[in-house]
Amino acid sequence: MRIDVLTLFPEMFEGVLGSSILGKALEKKLVDIRTVNFREFAFNKHNTVDDYPFGGGGGMVLKPEPIFRAVEHVTADDQGERRPRVILMCPQGETFTQRKAEELAREERLIFICGHYEGYDERIREHLVTDELSIGDYVLTGGELPAMVVIDSVVRLLPGVLGNEQSAVTDSFSTGLLEYPHYTRPAQFRDWTVPDVLLSGHHENIAKWRREQSLLRTLRRRPDLLEQAELTEKERQWLKEMAESPESK
Ligand code: 4FD
Image (cartoon, rainbow, N blue to C red):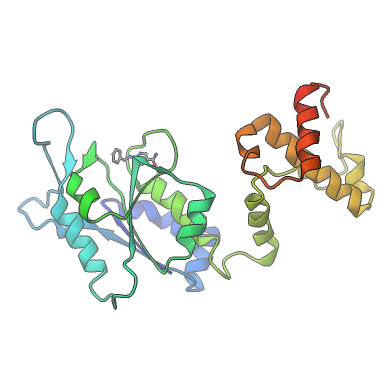
């Protein structure tokens, strides 16, 4: 996969792209990520990339020319085939989810546009962008952090990026339930012990306990997820009983 990021602040990406699993993925050439400062494509006297809004009002608006030119620059050698996804990070976009990460991970090319202003000239949205994404209902100073969030979640899904061990974690997310509680040594820390079942060595009981904990945790924290989750009829019935009787399990 190749990812181009159009930003006025390429230095913001250095730490994130150079560290941990993303850094390893780049080193191993499992993904090629390039940042492009689109100010380099503002061919006017002061290299301005923004301007006052037509019709008045506060704030600045990102001009179309530098963004269009930067996208045309990074796609200049493209062979045609599939048109790359051009993703605009903005609070009014579609909410980003694991499902969307899985969809983007199947692409061979992604282009991110990160803005810092009140908005983008609407012609960028209409004639350049294929996807508008938001990482959640809050406003940040720029689209860079949201783009890094999306890139991280997509790249970790690419073949070879995670070991087998960790890729199982993704599978458990796709069941649509929250994770069960994890414990490691020591079996007793201060006054706090680990649930007996986890020390029993009884794999069937452990699997049953973990499934119940996942179900209960999802019921209490994210009941909205239960509608989409893959549950047996027995599990739905059990959850209904748990929801009705507050005796905690
Ligand atoms: N929730 C997000 C994305 C960008 C952003 C910006 C219009 C603000 C939050 C266009 C307004 C860009 C998000 C930059 N804040 N700030 O994903």
